[in-house]
Image (cartoon, helix red, strand yellow):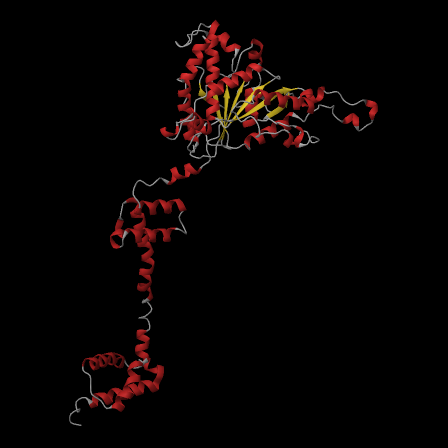
Amino acid sequence: MSESGHSQPGLYERRRRWNRDKDMGHQSLSGPGRDRDYVPWDRDRDRREPVDEPVGTVMQKTPIILAKPPAERSKGAPTPTPTPAPAATPAIEKPIVLMKSREESKGVAGGTETSVQPPAAAAKVEKEGQRPTQPVYQIQNRGMGSTTPTSVMDPVVGQAKLLAPEKMKHSIKLVDDQMNWCDSAIEYLLDQTDVLVVGVLGLQGTGKSMVMSLLSANQPEEDQRTYVFRTQSQEIKERGGNQTSGIDFFITQERIIFLDTQPILSPSILDHLINNDRKLPPEYNLPHTYVEMQSLQIAAFLFTVCHVVIVVQDWFTDLSLYRFLQTAEMVKPSTPSPSHESSGSSGSDEGTEYYPHIVFLQNKAKRENFCPRNLKQMHLVIDKIMMHSHLKYKGTLSMLECNIFPGLPPSYLDTEVNLFLLPFMDTDADDALPRAAPGSGPLFSLLPGYKGHPSFQSLIAKLRSQIMSMSRPQLSHTILTEKNWFHYAARIWDGVKKSSALAEYSRLLA
């Protein structure tokens, strides 16, 4: 007792007061102020000076210390209330700091966040944080800017490359009237290999430009002044002139290149040379020799760079036209070999030489030309004339497969060449046809007269479908894209103008 004499009275005094407060309950709140001031001081003193007590006393003290008196509970109740505010403040400030670092990283390279974490992690955080609220191209731009070098393509430029190519509204010059190459067509070409090149040859006034316009972008019911290839006006027809000079270029949205050419062996071009006293190149002495050599250069060029060459004629048949085609085939430049070793023997060159598909188009055909008997005779004549030619003049186009002659079996034509017939394109032709007799009945009087062939619109549509579905063999020993074809054609044209075979043939004509 003497060892704890100083501490026992204070301990008993404190217990007695606690028990009294416990019995009074909430009435202790209205007790004297000294009791409320005394309790926290004793608690602090007991913390500083621990007292050794028996086990039983400690067991009674433990729940009293853990369970605070109501006076302290009322004092300490407001204390945890502001506690969530400081804890919630960093949670709100954290995204604000991140957003600020993103804005700073957009203006200044690196930023505050770059020094804390590596650039790869920063870019990942930016992408994941901005995806719900920012457009995709902005995320890619910022992400690529922080992790990739500056040589990365601009998204705007990449989007422009994915857009559809510019649509041509009219033809442009590939070769001008002075027989010089033009480079303006390269702007409309792409880096893709699925391209079909279609050229046309024919005498003056046969309708080459009209046929190429209808095959490429126009319809028969449209005004001819809006055609992509300009046709002959009434004034030019009256004075016997030609509309097209050189080679015109047009490419469709289906990536089909159409090449319209000036008339071969044209008398109007010869008349223009003679009457205007135009100076001839030094290698040509006579104007008619120069006109014929121009025609041979154009034909040899088309036989080398085109998949399909359409030969248009308006009456059957002109033997001088076939003789011209055979001459152009003879002076055609050879296909460039992949290596110098392949030019060994003439037999091997003959096997690797390229020749296009050739289609004979009989324009302005009459009703008797569509007679099956006459059609068979036309096929036989063309086959006899072209039998020694290397040009692919049969097996790629058929009128019997177009259901134009539904009663004829496929075996009706023994040797079917690439021949197609087109009637006159006249919108008022149906009104001019004779009607049935009035007394034949009410039904037959309403029917149009017999034409002997389908309408021009249906025939040009069938011709277009067959031309577009033709095979597209390789023009050279390597696969050419559209732009590569343009450079290849420029090289072939330069080679044609400097061809030794054409120069020798010109010397023989003189």
